[in-house]
Image (cartoon, rainbow, N blue to C red; front, side, top):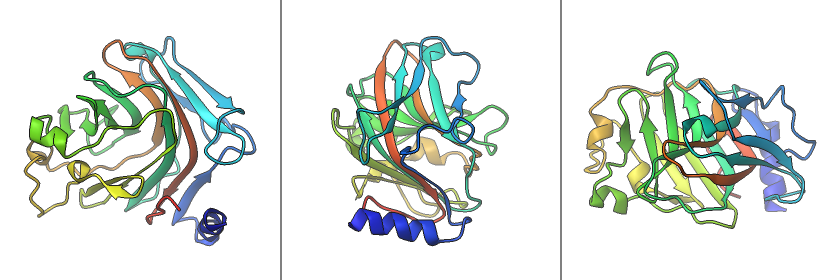
Length: 236
């Protein structure tokens, strides 16, 4: 009931606040959620899964291949101006490893043409990666790794993040702040030295969910109950 009330209240706010709220219960609208595969695509697959869902009966399944050209995503270009909050329920079949991978990628005009702000993993933890200079948040030192979190496997996890127009990044896993994936102007973060060397303020033009591997890792991810908004939604 609480979740239904939260989704109802979200549906009633102006479109500028709640750009997207999608649980895929009416199927996969490929005009609203097209596939995305920059440069090449060999081996990855996106499907509507009618047997596995966080709520209802449907979710989106991504089978990601190994190597860069095994990447595949689906996503939306309905992104608010100003603050961007993204909430998705995610299920991964395999744990993140030492290898660098991405499961959310966002074209970022602040970095330049065909450059992306990416969310994924390395050293077995969640991280942000900026394509233009390959900076990571957090730093991948032992101290930085300790401030992030692993992504649990085999069950649905609530993943949420905030991109602010001033360059702020905030991240939550199951409503718990991930301190290593937090960067705010004027706020010291000893494990964000690499990230904060640049003055780039993300300006993303799409949110894409899927899989991209820069080594040989393969994985299957499910995505459900996705919200893109100008205000925080949370996991309720």
